Length: 454
Image (cartoon, rainbow, N blue to C red; front, side, top):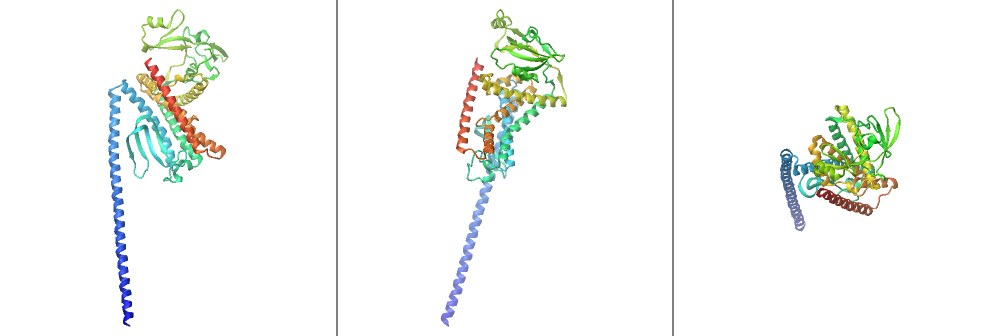
């Protein structure tokens, strides 16, 4: 009996001890959890504080940059630093708009964006929004920009779910994301052209308003009131498009004009442009055997910056300025189409040899354009920005490697064949294309500097 009771007492003691141990262990574990959670909270608080501190620093840096830009624009007009600042602002705005298009579309379809950057090279400042994993940054060289998107070409991150990778999204969503940047540049160009049109513009038509005395056009029988329908088989509907067609190379240096007279009859005339000197006041001096370029420069005491050598045909459009919403909208529509056609024509002409690659301009050439345009007026700078926006859109649409058009081609191939192109082949294709584009940029930069020096 005693033994039985002793056993029962031992069991009770053992059970009590076990319970006490469990309770103690549970308390210890609870304390550990509390410590871990406290550490996590402290870590998150420190991260939030650090992020907040970085955001404040970045904001101060941004304000400093904005103040510096305003000071340059207001107090140093038409200087070298003014022109460089204006050019960088134009490029930065257009790149921002382009990348913003990609960014908005990517976020809309749930694609993870690592970084949204304006500029290239070293980081100037950056910040993150609360509950947003994307890093927003400004980099040192405002000559580009990018969205670093998860799975842009293929599965490249095992930490990101496949549902957040671009490469696993439906093809139609990928096409929209790739095209979104170009679309934003198109919209920007149209808005800017509308703004220019609202300030007052001349009619966009193909009717001759004036013919220069003694010019090749007058000698060919063209008169005011004639409508120019075609030049070398290029359909003409605006004066700006005619100006581009007139500078395209021809084998015989002869241009075939199809004109419609006031009575409705159509005639074909041949015109050979004449070499001439045009000074900054618009005066034209024709070059011939007795009136050489050197003689004209000497007789009229012209400096290199006072004139340009050009080819003259001698027809001019209507310069009557019109105003109003209807005029602005009509101008924006017509000029948008004309600029788009012009850029496509130039790209095709580059491949056919009708336009020399030496006529392309890079940053230095663009600087000289900004320098001359800024002196004419703000509206002309707005127009130049619209032109560059459309140019950026067209260049990105071309089916060449390393640009949006090249990526779109691979999605379209997948649409047609039902199979994805091997990721290594696609990556190599874009890498080679990028290298070739960089080499082209260096060549254009060299030409720009050479022209500037000489």
